Image (cartoon, rainbow, N blue to C red):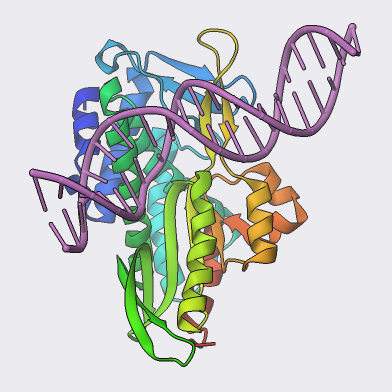
Length: 305
DNA sequence: AAGCTTAGAAAAGCTGGAGT
DNA sequence: ACTCCAGCTTTTCTAAGCTT
């Protein structure tokens, strides 16, 4: 497929309805990358990140940073994707999975999403915000599809939260739109936020949880799912690029300690400080933990306390 | 102590969708 | 049709840290 076709495909959300749509597109894009790039630019500060540079048909645009430790090549994607679907089947049957399978879950999700993001980076300059919007929406959808694949009842939508006075009388409802609502046996069990990067929007997840419990008098698990936390940054020299992060560790610690800890924060491309820092590492983990360890626990928590 | 580099935080910037 | 909220990357500003 030519670059223009890939870009048009990625920009059209209708094209991504089921998991197989994501897989098909990923396959096409990876095939293109094999031979179709103008250059691969190595990040100056963390060299396992690369930026893809498109040729003239992509206005010589430079993509978002791609973590080469996570991003599959066309060849490895083919073998891994079949293992991946098998892993999901195993999971549903309650079988244990090993570290290799965990690693694969992280890398497949990363590759599926970053092929879309990188393709959208070939859009002409004036449409970069369209790329951001579409990329974010498609990531939300991908995560929901994967959770549904696991058998979870999840949707995006609006939650009506009752606001009561001190005596407990209903004053009014206020509505919140959430990326991810997971139900179990008809009851809402988890509210989730799904974003490609945390930026300053992580604060809102803490506040959402705080307000929810304040308004309803009940605790409902709130989780956050992120693809990565890196962005391109310009360096002093022309045509030289590095990466920088958007995660605010100070805010995270403060909200965790003084407001309320979240019930799960998951990354595909986790940052070193999230593994090393004592406080961060107890709250932030890679995304395989959501599917393999935490999902059923969250769903089976008794609600209302 | 001045000068440079890096990390951290805030602001900018525009699109798309839901609701009224 | 218009407003508001949500989407998210790049740019810009500020603080901290390191070197000579």
